[in-house]
Length: 148
Image 1: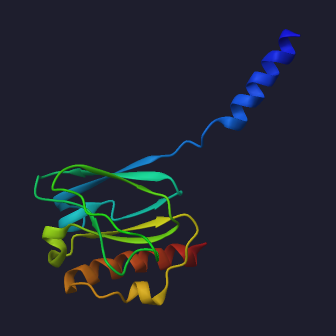
Image 2 (image 1 turned 180 degrees about the horizontal axis):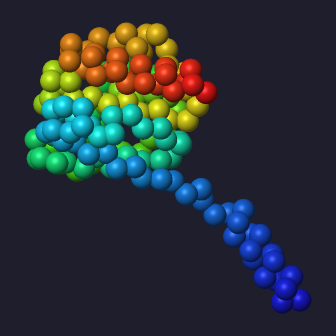
C-alpha cells in the first residue's frame, strides 16, 4: 500500500511540476570581444518562457526592443539604465538595442523557440553601425545553418 501511495505521489509530482525555465546572462559592455559598445553574447537562442538578465558593465547601458524587429503583436520593452531581466514567451526573433548607444552599433539578436528569420526582419531600418553588427550576426547564423 505504501509503495502504491509513493508511486502515485511521484507520478502526480512529475505531471504537475512546471517546466524549468532558464535565465541567460547577457553583459552590456563598453568594450568586449567584438569592439566597443557591445552585448556579450550578441546572439542567444531561448525556449519560450526563458529569460535574459541584462547585466551592466557600466551604468550607462540599457536594453530595449527595436521597433520593427519583434514578433507581431509583441508590445516591446525598454529597461532602465541598470540591470534588467526580461522573460520571452512569444516565439520569434527580437532585435535588442542599448538606447543610448544604438547609433554606435550596440545591438543583439534573440531567437525564441522555432522561428524563421524573414527578409523583412533582416532589412529592418537601423543605424549604419547597428546594420553592420546585425549583418555579422545573420552571417554567423547562415553559416551555422549551412553546416547542419
